[in-house]
Image (tube, rainbow, N blue to C red):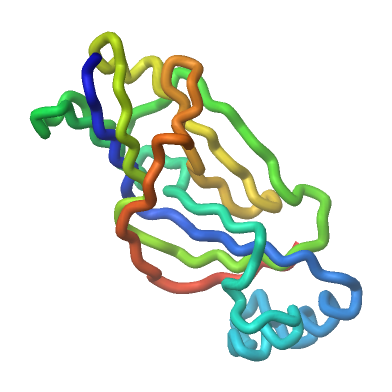
Length: 174
């Protein structure tokens, strides 16, 4: 068996999704939440949470754009065996659609850094053509790579979160 470390980094988002009823929706519209006219404390109060990041529905990953994600694969000797280029296109993609028709507030925290680190053991040499991203579209607003599949095996069991940081928050009301 050969050991590999797959690091997914770049620019992306951590999205916190909150379902909203009609009353909350009206208050958010009146406050011009999408125009960044409300403080996060005021939004949290309307949502009934302590912080806008308090949600059971959280999604993290780089944007699904080869110029914005970087995937680097290392072998057990810490040598780079493959890395994506800014023009790399996956041969296959698994799409997931979340909150398409739901009334939600999406809190998109624009982030940058290392999103995921996978430690995997393979019987053969790493083959990038067997790597498939799980791309999640959130409320028809944000599209990010939330996980990877390799040779038809979902790698979420082997995933650890990396080091990333916030670059700013955007609100979308669906």
